[in-house]
Length: 282
Image (cartoon, rainbow, N blue to C red):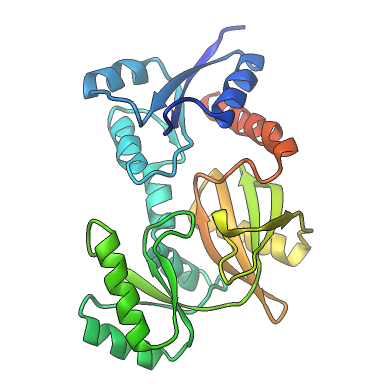
């Protein structure tokens, strides 16, 4: 059987556990993986030379630089999972909110704040949800996310974001829903894992989760997940949901979900990703 060559994007000083499993599972499927490490020095000619070998490329990096690298590969004519368009329009938290509103998918009430601080404070007063969550429109693992108790407190948080970041990135204000975070991971439009993430504070996503356990997906939630997937068009997707008064709300989606919530399921998830990639090149 002819071997298939695929690319794999990651960002670390050296290959980690995901990379180890991807290489092992790829070998079982007669796949040769060409590794693109965003931490390493490279130039456009090197990228083009390596990319030419690949039938398809999988992005497993959530670093800020990854979308530019993915767009470079797409410009070279390569298919990347997930595409820069899918990840950009769905990981932009404001665009995602607008998509949810348009498609009648329940999500926490959200507004986009003006850059002028006095105008932003006035918008927050009119929004009237206290405490309120402030977020940059881009960010991973709970970075650039904070809770404000008043307009004056919000001003300090916004200034802190600006000082910490390299630019004055747009900021949204979002209704606080006090709930654990319910993560659903899907691959090729199929639910493959659930993870209920709880913590001692108001942040439960990402690195803030203290306890993680599985949860059951009922028919109502499954229908909502299918509607989200039809909206975002992400092939390997992490969906974060909240629950309020027994009603589900989608918080956000991402195209580079973690595979390590349950170590015993990591190999299974990575195998399903590789099976999806094989299906995409058939």
